Each structure stands twice: as C-alpha cells, then as structure tokens.
Length: 83
Image 1 (spheres, one colour):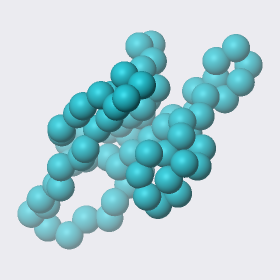
Image 2 (cartoon, rainbow, N blue to C red):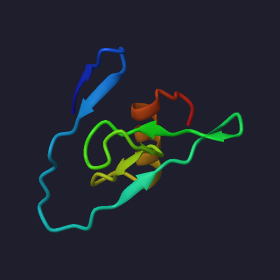
Image 3 (tube, rainbow, N blue to C red):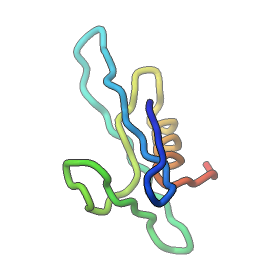
C-alpha cells in the first residue's frame, strides 16, 4: 500500500490491486465507533461518493478476519489507536 500526506498533514492511502487465484465474493467490514456519545464519521476522499460522510471500513483481504479489517481500517482512516 502506498501512502503520502495531503496538504493538511493527514495520511492518504492508495490501495494496490489484489490478485486472486480464484473468483471470490468481496466482503466489506465497517467499524461503528462511538466517541463521547457520538458516531465517528469520515469524509470519503475518492469516488464513488467523494466528499460524502461514512463510517470507516473496507474490503476484507484473504487471510484477514472481519475484526482485523475493522481495526485496521479504523486506524488508517481515523488515526484511532484503541482497539
């Protein structure tokens, strides 16, 4: 995964394509994070729905659990350090 910082200093990630040995069904995992009684949202940086708000999440990669994906995506997209 390539990453860089945008003008505001936040990390931006560019995902690399995953080559699969056989057809699979994509599975997404999203994290609902509640902080001080409010749901944490992120603003999408890429299409589709660029500039829209959503909960952090992403696709599960082979060998990773949905829980691991939620934790990884939450850390990447929000900067949260707690599990």
